[in-house]
Image (cartoon, rainbow, N blue to C red):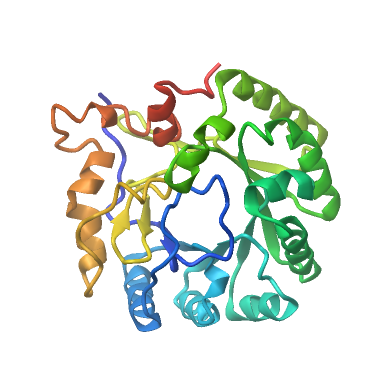
Length: 323
């Protein structure tokens, strides 16, 4: 077994700064939509993250724009020298909010949209969510903000991705991320209606090849382009969960994978200075994701990081993107 390459401190953080959300998307991998930490606690943790060398924070929710103090969080983070990205459903991106977040120092925005029109998108994300999100996208593009679109592929929207890319490309978008629906959190209730099979995956692979050929300057990210770092003696394949990336939950517990926070989080919370690095280096949750001291009965993690997204690999018992 080749050992994994793990950093002594995280480089990247995904942070659920609120559980509150104005939408109830059918495919959501979260199941709780309440709870958040105080501004003071968040700013103190940002200071510690900056001290240990974190380079990038992606603020998530729930819906992060629900927080009226989001600009204060962004500004403090940016001033600390950390690159700031916001993942949002886009429906609350008023002109004023776009301007204030850019002024605060947000560098990148990721907007979640599930189809090329309201008929496809709104069935999953809710009535009028498509129009509101696309209006938000336009407001970002009008300000020349770095903007990417994220789409979760499922049984209802997978065969429209070429038209989807054609549409967002025409609007000025040059980066898209495709994730795969997994029946987690609230989405577990929609497993039968949304879960892809291997035939769907094959069709998606062909569509993405056509997209890349047709739009060569469109950057396509996500599960079909797993990141990899390989050396002679060690490797980290996939998302970097627990090896370069830490997830902070809205209750200040910590996770390795942002898709599995409902069931896989530390018992400890970040409560004082030093907790971040101590949890990262010593908590058993991270040891599991690094294949360190695995118990004999924990065979699910014997091949962690060897097949792209490990949660997806466990669901299908194989890497559905190979071959």
